[in-house]
Image 1 (cartoon, protein in one colour):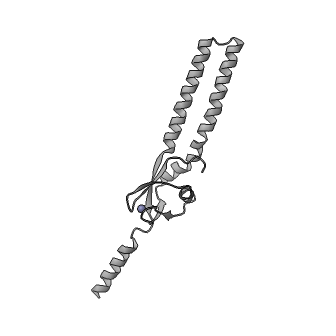
Image 2: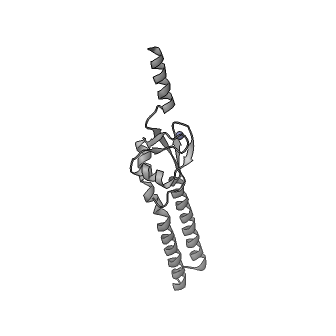
Image 3: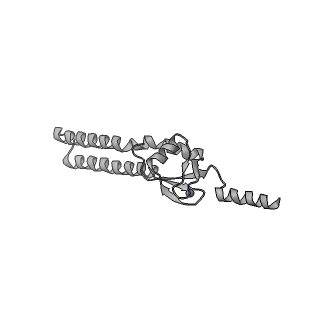
Length: 142
Ligand SMILES: [Zn+2]
């Protein structure tokens, strides 16, 4: 995942939010559990809706390079149209300004869509200490 920026994970166990590392993102992408950075519980993305959003991030990563190409093409066409006399200088400036404005808005929206916090669920809900405490309680009852 090349342009995975601003993706954070929230651990349901220790209630910490942390920046996901590339290998953690890969683990989520292939649906493999991984350790929480803080409490080391096994975590997995359980929400199907978030998983869909996560899988769609690859498409959003393509928005920026394609918008750069589109905006450059528009600016060149506007310059060429002015040179041919199809557009006035003011008209050419207006077209260029609108193109740059649309470019900024689309890139900003794409970045907004790429910024997400994944709600990670714990696979083994009981930590080892708690399991040990339950075992001790059972032993003392006998
Ligand atoms: Zn944790």
